[in-house]
Image: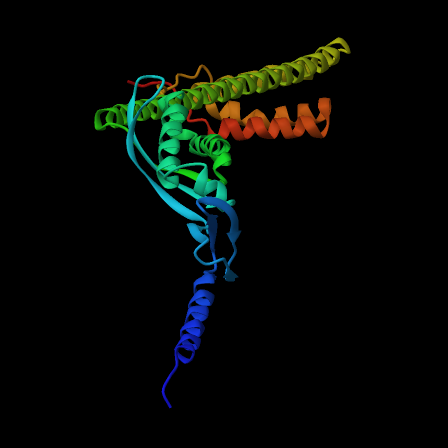
Length: 319
């Protein structure tokens, strides 16, 4: 049976319909948005998944990546407010929020973001001193993010982060900064050492003050005790007791002989009396003390006997 023209037309029409259907079906990948243009004018945006357009009338305009993207900022030289030249580079992160704006509001989106970021890096860092530049990196990043994000908002993008990676001053400037840091540390060490000496002198002066106060207090108490002993002897003499004055004189005599005997330059002592007579009289002094002062006097007499016994006393010099 011969094929007629109608038999050939039907398969051709079927093929054309299938081609039209496949031409009108568009698949958009996850993380992307496509813009649709009709006769060169934007009409709508295709979201991820299966979409249908009118073949030969509508066409895909721009394919925009909607995921967060990173953009390296190349190294550039920046002159600070105090005329220091530093080399700076950075990195910028951005995300497209509106595909039509990113596609039709600016030509060359990445190049526009890059130039905008570099320009604002020079502006922000050029308004600061070198010391502020090196110590306030977080502040610089915050200022850059705010300025660049505000300028890029009409393009339908969101600047998520703008970070300064490296700030490299010249070698001679780094050496000068190292010397300055060393001088500052030396200065602080000298200040701390001076403060330590000051505190030591203050503590030493306070120690001398305390020692002098205690020495004065001891002398005062010794004088009070001496005055008390003199008063007791005076009262005994006033009552007609001659033994009290004998005790007082004997005690002073014994103390003087003990001091003479313990002197480092005393080798030979000339005694006007026999040493045995002096030592033998200590028993009588003890009796006198017991009679006049009671138990305390007897203890004092015993002390006098021990001092006399320990004193190196010799007889008259025969040489």
